[in-house]
Image (tube, rainbow, N blue to C red; front, side, top):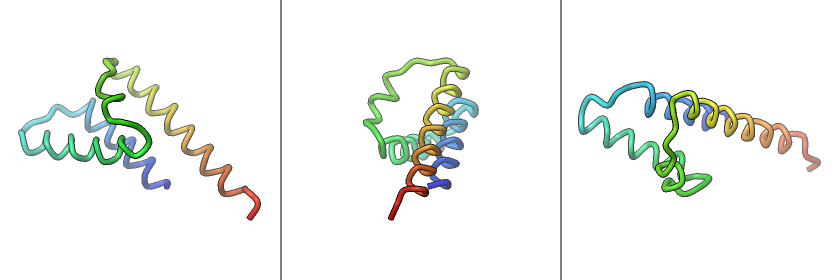
Length: 79
């Protein structure tokens, strides 16, 4: 799950911080976005949002923190 969080953050950075330089790279990024962001919710939800880079960073941090809290809770749950 930790790898998922890291991948989510890397995906976020690749979508907002690095301009797409080719159609192939854009298609690969779109595919990765749909695969990773679609795990927890519809990708239409994220696509419909118009946010600044700072707003997306805040969103990713919030999601990441929530996932980390979930992992800690699961780790310490009684068996």
